Length: 334
Image 1: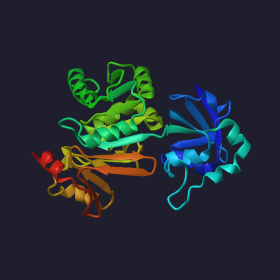
Image 2: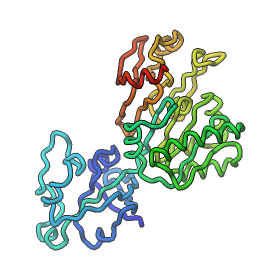
Image 3: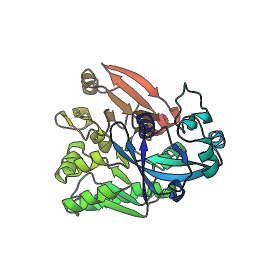
Image 4: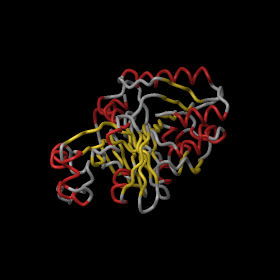
């Protein structure tokens, strides 16, 4: 069921950015029909922008004083430097209304695109990665894998099963898994990606993969996707605004092109913690980029980024450590 609510701009933006996760309302007749997994369409009263959120859970309380005791101030919309006060809600509801109906804290998950830039996973996902995936995957109905090479069916199926089984082993299996490659029509591929709750963009030859994505009209679908997009190696590069393919990555000549633009950063994978290739350092004078070892990831949600593993930021020929995990560095080099 879909419900419709209006929001002031500050609350709308807080939900969109992902830190306000509880919408507080009177538990009147309108709100009494809201249940977990329903959809709420919020309208920004200042801009008329609309945003869909999924209801995670409905918390009922006799009054706002009790509600405030059970949820962090950030989750109910207060900024770090603000002091939460239940009496603030008297601006919206009278004491008599609250006593008559009680109140509700609607726990929501904004349909904000989530991007995971990963390097490679030789083994199973570790505990931290499983925790991250559990946080960001809100629905496990449909999982789609975009192939590296759209005509290499046997190779695609082999690696699709290997990578999807990592989710199954982590207890994060989906009801349906689909492989998007040349066995689908353009329309079928677009529909599969559009309906997927999570999309895995494979590693492989970066420009070849991107050409197939564009040929099948998946570029627009991916840019508009509101679920979870996870790139690995080539997929990570193609999610970026600018894609860098230097000769040191195995190409006959350097290639630079506009990527999907889902994230505003460029990230290289498979860093071995050694010296950075000269052509990459030269590129860093024009294009900043991140460099990460296998089993690392950069999580991008709204304007926030979460880094895990061994990740370095390279700019103007200089390397700066963003985060480090020596155990993972050793594993990546073995």
